[in-house]
Amino acid sequence: MHEFPVTEQIIKIAAEQAEKNNALKVTQINLVVGESSGFIGESIQMYFDIISEGTICKGAILKMENVKTKWKCPACDILYSRQPLSFACPNCGMDGLPTEIGREFYVQSIEIET
Image 1 (cartoon, rainbow, N blue to C red):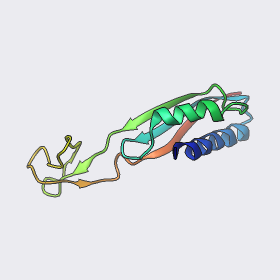
Image 2 (spheres, rainbow, N blue to C red):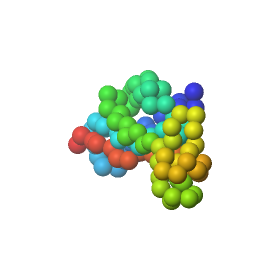
Image 3 (cartoon, rainbow, N blue to C red):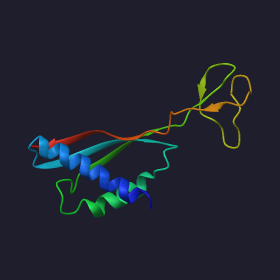
């Protein structure tokens, strides 16, 4: 349920930018959503459809670019996607360390109709 306030913020950001550019409506909102961000795209879409009613964002397409989580091997210095139930580097077998890759969550851009 933490997607509700985040979705409100997405609509607020898009609406403010659209109004600054004298837009008639927002046609698309492009998001970057990391696999480990803690946000579920389907929930964001569901809340967006409800919350955007009566706003300049109503009917806009939410396009989500998903970013896979990456781990870094301290021995090999490579980035990799870990396998289920394992933290092992595919190159050397040493346990990797989490990185910030895959934790992203932001509005990348909006498309408007003027």
